[in-house]
Length: 100
Picture 1: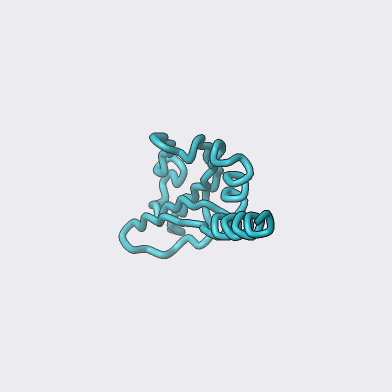
Picture 2: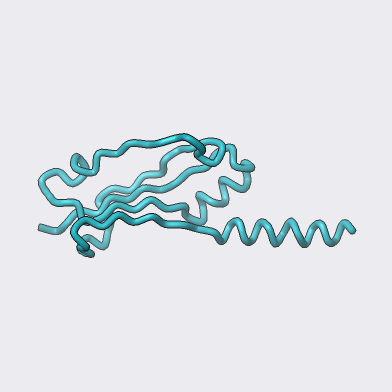
């Protein structure tokens, strides 16, 4: 019985850690700017329910145009979320600027 519980717990941890997700917002369907001009981990608690973080992408790119914005849960973000049982749930935001 204990062995089945360990196996199920291990499988749940593997599936949770492998569930990285990314949201992308493209500006004018432009793929330029392969390296992020800005990248930062944002802090959320209790799975981020009802929480927001603001970022002014126009200030990040300055006079350059915004190429795209991404928010994702990296492997490390997911690992931290699992270790803290969802109490601390970070996400990483990246802003890509056009190379004018």
